[in-house]
Image (tube, rainbow, N blue to C red):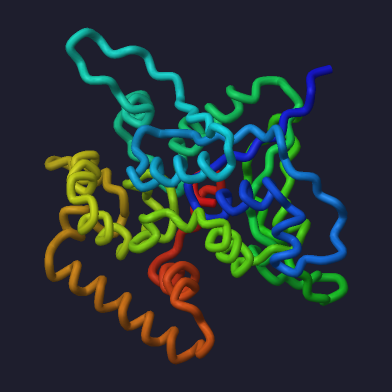
Length: 311
């Protein structure tokens, strides 16, 4: 029987990064966070760290992976979907561009997440093969919602777990849920470890492709201001049929060309500032980090990202 492999998959975001740091030395962090009386959790000394690279990630994400490698003292395997070699004289295609062509130019969307399936999950499962694996996922203990049992009418908290893989040889575990780690603990781990947070967190609240359709309007503005070349590239993916008027855009509401108008940018910034102000008044003890990540962004528009992309 094959030896059980222990794998932590990074998204490039704060939760999966904090999870790897936590599992590297659980007892140290339990002491620091005041998590007493928990079952023993040995450090993952032979963990495999992986990152599924779509070829369309932000440069800040790759820089952050380098910082994590230095802290963990182990390499992070960069996995990519298989792409046929380009013909002589043609530029190499990113995994995203290859699959976009296979899907007839249809951009991924919340209802058609072929990007997650083909560029994240499939390379991950191909890498695992048929070996027995424990996959560690960084969903926190405070992620979920309160529900009411219809029979007893008692309230209970339903943790968010999401879909990662249905392969029978992969056992998915949630150490943060098991050990009761919440949002503040994740910030503490990242800060106290010295790894910090990805640089894109100054304007973006999630990891993933630079054109991710789950981005909020203000994050598209952030992309335009911090990476105008990538914003232009994202615009080039959008298409509007001049005969039928059918639109193939990242957002159903508007194209990136429409969003980039100065008056639209001003409106988005005004709305975001108003929400920030309402939040400051409604929650006296909210930190600036909570304000940015967890409240203002969630109020802008709906859309929960994919676990393997954004944790």
